[in-house]
Image 1: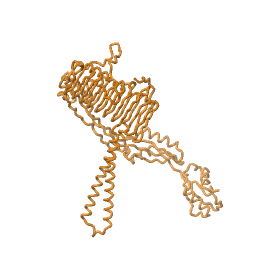
Image 2: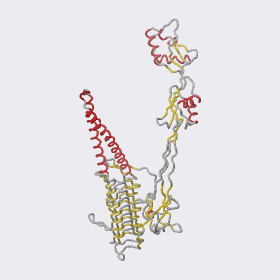
Image 3: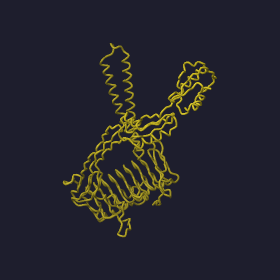
Image 4: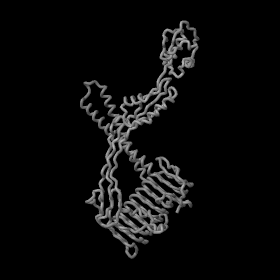
Length: 559
């Protein structure tokens, strides 16, 4: 038996070869025969030295034993613990390999290991206790990693933020008023109110300081402080002399809220626009408390605010157009101009629109529906109320530079509806192609420079012109720099396009009906069946309708 050649060491920590006086063994032993012999020496859990086992069996086969005297075949090994630390030193772990008959680690050993790697911050004592406990349960050779320390990342400060202290007139369209009994009148949007001179209109929340972080080795990670952003001073506002974080009105008028400031309109106010008033043209902004009657024209270099309806009229504004109630035209043939047309340099906001043409330099938002309209805007289109339960986009032609969001798209009757989102995709794609072409050209130029440099090194030194050497060196340096710049521009444009393709989508919260023509770039897709809540995406090659998983809600039927 092979066990006649084995003996446990005096310290009982290793199983070694011991040669008896007379050796009579077969020469057909296998490695498993050696392993199976270990329990006879109470060494079943020892680490088997495979190279030594192979050497032992080779000696047995050859009948030459002198070279294997005292050879260690298996040995007791304690639990092996090593430190694993991230490159940024923000996390440290202990990698544990189960003991081979040896001892588990001690708390002092773990602390010594951490100290050796200067891991002094963010150490989790509970995690260290878990390492001690779990190490005892690992099978011989079983490996497991435990995170025991985590650094504190630096927390950047926040930039200045701005809080409006007056109501946004555009939001009034979204908030019907309630009476004393709590009943809501959908037609009552409240009075159009102006503010008085000296009224506080916006406050600035000051920037905050960053909080430094620390790696597990104690290195301080400097945090950036937030930046103080100044107010943008528009017409009719100034920073308060008493409080530099307060913006006040310097005139009476209608407030228009911007991201970092307020604009006060010294507006022309009218009860209504009809045949009695005639057409209205004003260099500032116009507030119309009632309706704009059929056939009337309203033009303003500033904003236009309508408290009632706009019916088969023309409104042009250099800024925003806000219609508290609805925009109504009448049905015309496909090639005829719409009887009702609104054109805004910035945004258009209204409750609903039907048989009208809407054109905006920024966004268009309708809370109830848009039916049989011709809509175009350079921003996004939203046809949806604040609850995301009402809002139908049906009929007509819609062209939107960015995204479209609505509750229902199309109608149960299959009304033909054409919607096009991300209309400037081709422009961004063309820009990407231009950057790619420039990058490829610079690669070619750099390759030529490298080739010329290589040819020059093959010439004898006495035949190398210093002027030529310097010229090639400068040529290569120039195109290497240009290549890096081209790569940066190409990368930024690709990231920009990728972001736009994720964001400039058509999102439908409830139902897409059949008969909707969806277009992105030159690609078109006609819906032939109903779709549940979906996001309509364009990946640059095809249009995809991806279902959304949403909680069940009682959706209102399309209007």
